[in-house]
Each structure stands twice: as C-alpha cells, then as structure tokens.
Length: 111
Image (cartoon, rainbow, N blue to C red; front, side, top):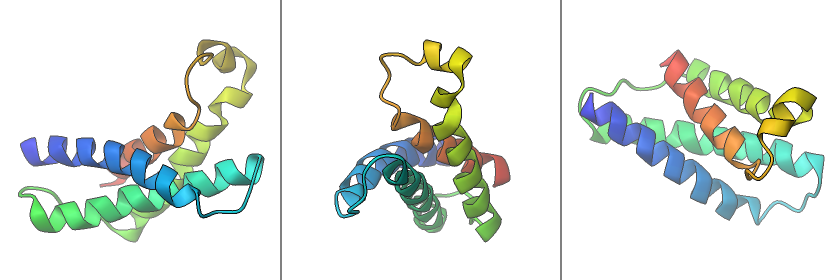
C-alpha cells in the first residue's frame, strides 16, 4: 500500500517535470504539441512504473497494456477542455496537468 502511494507520487512528479523537460526538444506547436505531450507523459509515467516495480515492495510490474491504457486515458483527459461544459470548470487550470493525471490514472487502472 505504501509502495503504491509512493509510486503514484513519483509518477505525478516525474510525469510532469520529465514530460515538460522532454517536450522542450519536440519542435511542434499547437495541437500536435499537446498530442506529443500526451505520449511523452504516458511513456514517462509507465517507465517510472517499471523502475518503481523493481525498487519498491508490493508493486506489480506493468505490462504493455498499462502503457496503452495510460496513453488512451491521457488522450481523453487532454481532450476534456474541448467539451464546453467541462471547459468552463477548467478555467484557470494549466491544461498540461490533465494528460499527466490521465496517464497516471490509466496506469493505475490497468495495473
């Protein structure tokens, strides 16, 4: 239980800072940049899960299905601001947080 909580915190922080760091090297702008960030955040979250499974106790090793689920849920989370009703609730929030949280939730669902 504690290992899984530590993994969630590592995934959130690593997905955010690692994703932003790696996004600087992607020469895209606009919507393709958000898609790239979705994929980068999901991969970083999954890689932290792989490393965390080796280091932490009581944490299962993720499968490639966990990576696929992380990408899909991160893409859904990134698309949430496009829905008018949901978009009004998300004003003032950095929309790049959504793919990271979505990737972490997708990883945790499938693992």
